[in-house]
Image (cartoon, rainbow, N blue to C red; front, side, top):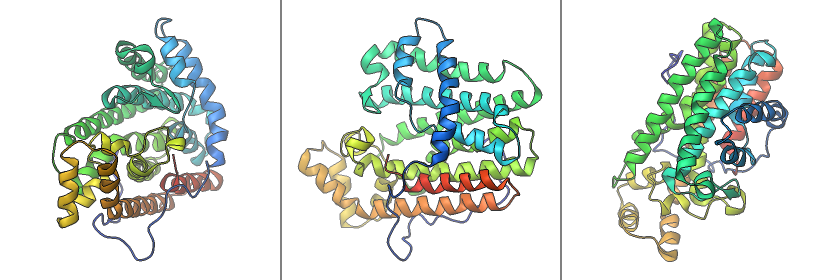
Length: 349
């Protein structure tokens, strides 16, 4: 994390070890009610911000936002403010800004990965072309900062700075992820460090941004950022599992999509790090094109990586809850933050 200093060292997630008992399974919980409640606030505000962009950009971006996601980041911003006793109105500009940045990353990620479908509809580049996807994403990230600085109060200026730092960390994580695709193997530690930037940085920002806008004390902001950083890693670990084993009818992506793109995600890094015969066979399979039989075998060889990736997600979820417990927060929003952390490590989409 670049925007805050962590208050203490987190409990080790022990990526190479499986705890006793069965590993947690993604998908045991439905969407938390708080996402629907805050989504009803954030969604229209995001639509209004997109509607204010240049008319030549709007068709592609309106299409993209026509199927909005879970809006976890926007909800976290509002919850962060509520947790320190502030009104949600204080945090709405931050919630809009973080959703614009997140969606900028999605539009560009689809270009990088060549994905033609997201949320069960064509991606921006597939429907409107590469040029529209590139400049549309550019417009979103700049609109996010502009939205925060529309009223340049000290709190909003600080929030914009924190968001800019988190965005840079996210872009750095994405660059590392792309570099990993050209390597035969990536260590588990490297993979987790990449995920801390690619996903953890923006979620750490989201979880603290509302408190920053509410001018909460530094230790509270730090604890909320630590919470967000941990659920970010948990979120990405589960995302890596869903990228291989997720149900296409739920995720909107083909079976084994990450393997077909040769991504060195967490389950792959864990399985290859075993250094045994199964790891050697997996490495050989991933070195060539994957047909149906090879894809099925590679997925089978990744079983231990799946279990341990979910164990890592659970460990970081517990670290997130410990960070929440370290400071005094409003009881209702604190409970919502706990529920959101549990959802992240047990989702199926």
